[in-house]
Each structure stands twice: as C-alpha cells, then as structure tokens.
Length: 482
Image 1: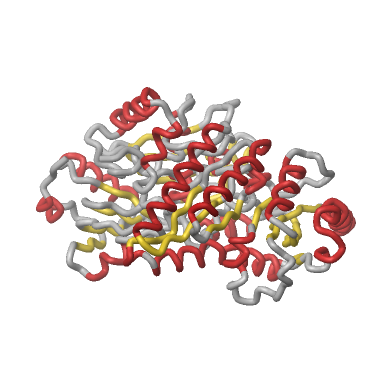
Image 2: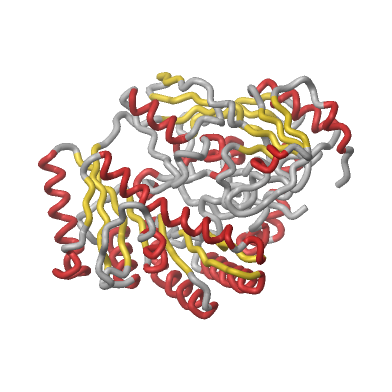
C-alpha cells in the first residue's frame, strides 16, 4: 500500500515532530523485541492534536502507529513506515469520581501505571493491575493489550476494570464507549487478536493493540481500600514439585487463597540470582514460588503464615523450608518485586546482545486451563530441552499462564527457538488455551493467528478492522500481516 512521504511535511501545526535523519528518532525506533523504521515521530501535546493529525493522515493514507513507553513484547509499538505518535506527554491529572455507586479514576493514556496506582492509593483506593513494567508502561498500552500483572491470580486483567473509554477514530471522529449496567465481563485471558464474542464495542477496543482507534481517555473502576499483604519466595526442590503445588493451590485443594501465585523455574532462577541484593541460596533450591497473601489484621496475618507453612512443608521438606523468604514491610516487598522483575530484564539484556548475529530472546505467553498445566509445562520442557537452547519459565502460573523464554545467539538458533514457540502454541490451543495471554500478537507473532483461529474467524476480525479503519492506516502490520 503506497503513500506519499512528502505529505508528512504538511502535518497540521502540532507539537514536537522528529523527522527522519534526526538522531532522536532512534529513541523511538525500538521496543523490547524489535527495531522499526518510522519516517517521523510526533510527540503529541493532547488528544485534540492527535485527532487532527489522525484525520490528516487518514486523508492522505499515511500509516500511523501509536506508542507509549514502547515496553511492547511484540513489536506492536514500532512501525516499519509512516508516522509514530507518542502519548508520553498525555499524562494529565488523575480525577477520582463517584458514579452509580462505583468509584472511578479518570486518566489519560500516557499516565504511567505505577504513578496511577500511587495516586489512587493516596486517596485510599486500590487499582490492582500492575504489569512487570509498571514503572515504565502506560495505562493506554495496558488497555491496548488487556494487560494483567503479578496480582492477576486474584484480580484479573484490565478488562475487568474498564468502565468507559473515549476513543478517536482514524478520521478524527470522537466516540465514547461504556459498559451498561449488568454487562457481563469476559475475564478469560486473551487468545489472539480481537475478543471474538464481544457484544459491547468497548470490548473490541480493549486488547486491539492500537489497530482500531486511539484511546484518548480512560475510566477505570477502583477497589475500596489498599489491602495489607505479605510476600514470600517459597523454595522448591524441582520444577515438577513447584507445578504440582501450583495446581493444588489453584484448584482449591489447600486452605489458602493467595493474591499472587507465580513461578520462578530453574531457568528463570538463574536470571533472578543476578539481581542486586539477592541472597545466597543452596543448590538444592531448584525453583521458587512467588506469592502474596492479603490479611485484615495481625492475627489473620499470623494465621495465614501458619497455613502457608503447613501447606508447603510436605512439598518442600524440613531442609529447604529454612530458605523460605518472607517480606513484611513495603521496602522488603519492593525488593522481592525487583528480584522478580530481574528475570525478564536480564533475559532482554541477553537477547539484545545477540541481535547483531540474528539471535535474540524468543518469548511467549501462551496459557492453558489449570488442569492441563502440568501436561503443558512437561511439553514445553521437553521441546525446549530438545532445542539445546537456554530456557526459562516464570510469572502468572496460577492462571495457567507462564511466560516462557528461549535465548538464541544466532539466526539458526533463533529459527530453532521459534519452532519451539510454535509447537507450544499449537499444544496450548489443543489443550483449550490461548497463544497470547496478555502480550498480544503485534508484528512479531502474526503467525499465531491461524494457530488460534479458523480462517472465517480471522476474516470477521478483518471486517471489524475495516469498519473502524477503512484505509488501514492504524497499527499497520499488527495482528494481520501487511
């Protein structure tokens, strides 16, 4: 699809525009996983400006990609051509309002997720969706991917909390979408592409990866108070033991109900050990479970600690239980979070080292029903070991949704790692799960779509895309190969 690049010089009077050839454009040409080639970057000042620029680009068929902090794991936030619009300045004030018996926070898409959480906590409320990159990622990007986070075992994905969205279509038209009283919300993890069984268009926009509209304002439901909790890293003698305990907990076979239930398997543990301040542990600790447990008061806290000890002791044994790590204070809890964050951080660092040779990190976030988790993880470990590449699994295991990574040093190894990924996606779908639980498809994983969906379903999605974006300018290359 051709377009006239000279028209970019005629953009309406706007804020800061970085043109091709300017060194600053390199800052906006990469996300976590790939490098793109924008012809220009607009650092937008407000939603009105974006609406005006979108209408101009739509009229001249100029491709437009929207981005926040470019923490994407799929290449969704970097274009191969056209205009990149950054929402980094659209942080706006946070307003907390009462509406129909609910407390909502109203925010702009450029708001950093962690900043939003702090602002609502200071007002005595709680917003629970916190991706690993919460200190960098932005709320608009969270909505665009239906993001989750380490607390998703109890609190679920972003979709559960979205009450209303103000959107701007490619031709500049503004619309407001909102949930109706009594609307049922699909809490299932993403699969790939658009939510197929949507009835309210707000659910078509959530998770659409910037391909249908620009989300200019967001209303999110808040919970009434910030809960007290403790964190723990529970040592495991093997990955197998960790998986069996996860299924036992997630299936309700133990008298415990965590807020967070995450895996740090033996491969991921090697990355976590590189975190600053991580303690020395014996080689007999092969993996960890990372949990958070909420409590109402000190007596309940002590009761939960005792119940956790009794639940895990038969799996861990007297020797390893001595290496149980518990965080009670906010400072300690933040330390645990940073140790956990070190896993993807270190994997990304290694992956980038291999880009020049054609390698990199090959990541995925497929998911399966919890009763198929052990079977699925056995499959992953078998095919990953057969590839002879370094591997790891971590994150939202309590939802049957781990993040699995392989590291490839060369182009040949990358092809091998990609084959592992495709095998795992096919297996996950065969077990009733999905190929992309929260990271989306973007440009890198468009080959996931036919694994997850029949051709007629993909064509339905293309129809929705054409209805919202007739000239196919938004997020070109995301979800659907060009």
